[in-house]
Amino acid sequence: MSHEDFKVMIPAHALSALDWTDDRALTDHLAECAECQQELIGWEQTAAAVALSASPAEPSPLVRQRILSQIRSDGESLGTPKIVPFKLAQKNIWSSLGSLGAIAAAVVFALLLGYLFLLWRENRAMRNEVQTLLLEKQRIQKDLEMVTMLKKPGTKLMELSGTAVAPGAFAKLAFDQSGHAMVMTNGLPAAPAGKEYQLWYIVAGKPPMRGKTFSTDRQGTGMIEDQLPAEALKASVVAVTLEPQGGSDTPTMPMYLSSRS
Amino acid sequence: MQPEQAQVSDVELLAAIVRKDETALAELYDRYRVILFGLLVRILNSREEAEDVLQEVFLQVWRRAADFDEKRGRPFTWLVTLARSRGIDRLRSLAARERVALAGAKQPAEEVSDAAADAFASEQRTLVTTALEQLPEEQRRPLILAYFDGLTQSEIAAKLGAPLGTVKTRMRTGLMKLREALGNQSTSFGF
Image (tube, rainbow over the protein chains, first blue to last red):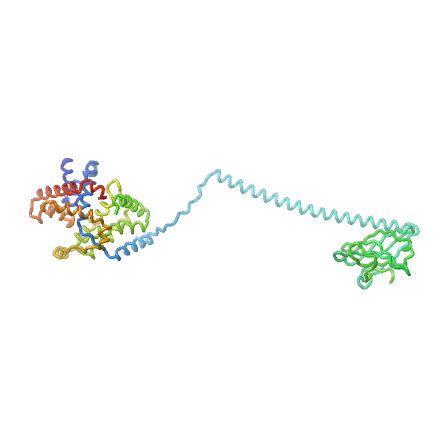
């Protein structure tokens, strides 16, 4: 058959009315003929219009429900939930190197922090040690001064004992003829906040004369240099009380240390 | 109804159906259920069978919307072709006894409500119906037998007792006249 023969068959093909042999032959021709394909599109539109001549009819609402139910069922059975696929990150040598660099930097930073912490802790320990050594040095110096003073001719030594409020405490007081005195305490309880110990020189018939205030270390050890009043050179009693910071003009009882047993 | 806008929207709906948008399918169904169901009732003369086929048609649309090619025709043409093809297949699959019974019990399809008829664009239907009625009976009859009964030219010739060549000529002439009657309006009406 010629192209024109096939072209004549196209309207019947659009109506699906061709007999099988004709339909088969035209279908083969359509596969190779663009002109006839285009011709067919036009005839199919005309044929489709014939559908409009049928009386319109309303299907049961159940049809719509069944269709929607079926497509949902299909979606579930096919396992095609609308899930956004997780995208794996693209491997990139530069980003990988960047990541490694970041990790290395973090490690170095952590090491530096650790090293700084060690340095800070060591420094603090050394500062504490220096402070301890300085205090030790001061104590030794005081001890040496005490010894030096005791070696001087005319130096007198007085011992003070702990009272009932400080039974384990004791002190030694050395003083020369000029009234230069040194007191070394031991075993005194730590003074509460806002309080400090104070020396008193008591002469019979006179009010107690105030001496210097001082504090002690954790062992209750204290080293005080003082200048005794002239009257105090003949003092019969030397005592230590706990007074407000800065000292008092009159002693606050009880006494913690006293030269009178 | 704005046919031109609906035409564009139909293409968009089919694209959405390809993306498995259920609401798009529901919208397409709502637009064309009356036309397609009327066509299927006319072919099958059975509401029950027509509803069954209508369901099959829209399930096929759901599963094969990607087959629609805008270059090869409009959505309306594609949908009607699908529905008619399914309807004719069902008609042919029916037992001869049932088919005879159906043929003997041809009844007009149940008319739809005025609102539905409006939605269906009765103007288009009037245009097509008028064009068909203006055809001579010898030309119109082969068209109707082919389109709604799914008969081939040989079957039509046998049914009408006319020579095959005559049936071919009358069928082609009738369809050409229908196209001329619809003319350019077929483009503006979206079919």
